[in-house]
Image (cartoon, rainbow, N blue to C red; front, side, top):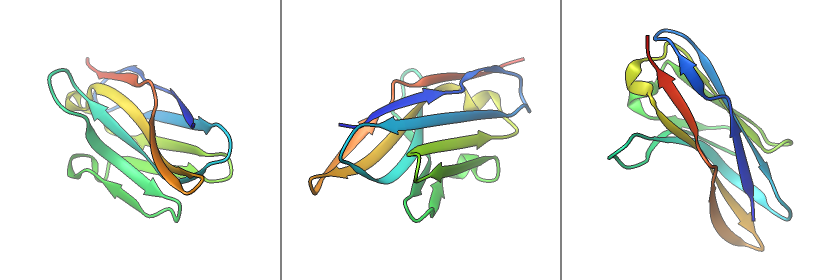
Length: 119
């Protein structure tokens, strides 16, 4: 099983930047895609950005141009660079990984990191 550990959340002011990082660990796995989701109280978890092993990426319309996702396949890490933060970006951000082990596909989630955008 793959474990995901996130870091980098916190309290920032509108317009500031933030970097979220996530590292995957475990044994005998191959990661297909890694991504970030976010969730606010009372709502479902929504995709923010996702990057595949070939480094093609998808973004939610609400974050295009402000968020940039990247990954290091050798280190099994994924990073989300966030610019021009808005109060509506406030949420718990979860790292996600879709991986294969013994030809079976699994999904793993991190514990979540809080991002609060407020003046």
